[in-house]
Length: 215
Image 1 (tube, helix red, strand yellow):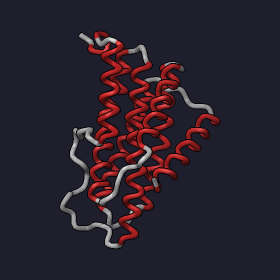
Image 2 (tube, rainbow, N blue to C red):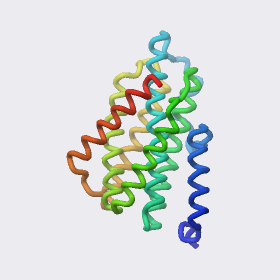
Image 3 (cartoon, one colour):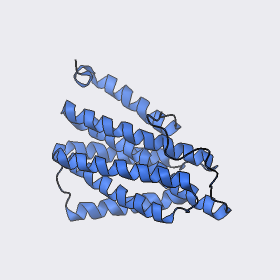
Image 4 (tube, one colour):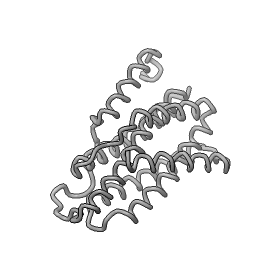
């Protein structure tokens, strides 16, 4: 039996609310251990470097909050059970990223963004809108999102302190997963997003990352 077909709208709503609360509360379990050795003594020595690492990891944590919401919206708005399962599978891997970045923030003595509920709500609406536009558009939106996130993470690898081996290992592993998710979306038939849409996505991401760096 297919759970997607058997679930009622109320079941799906309650499940979605449960996943949202878990993401925002920081209790999403990781299915894979966080990259990098916890006992690695090579931490940023200077306070400024630790603050930089914390700010960048807070931004990455916000990105994973948004990923959970985005895939939730896309899975909820497709009529294709197989595609819904694909979005859920990607969300589980992004859930690892969410747990890794949350754990790293704790190790650095830093807090998540105070605006996480706002980020989650906005990304959920985007996911629902992309899904309503059709599966090819939804998959294309996923592919473009992952492409931009990959570029964003590459930039963080350039900015993170060389001595912050743990953060760098986490970001590198996340980047590899994002590449694979984007490739999967294209393989499943994702449509290329028009240039104005890509530009709007970059502008929205810039607002989010700049704000989350501080708040």
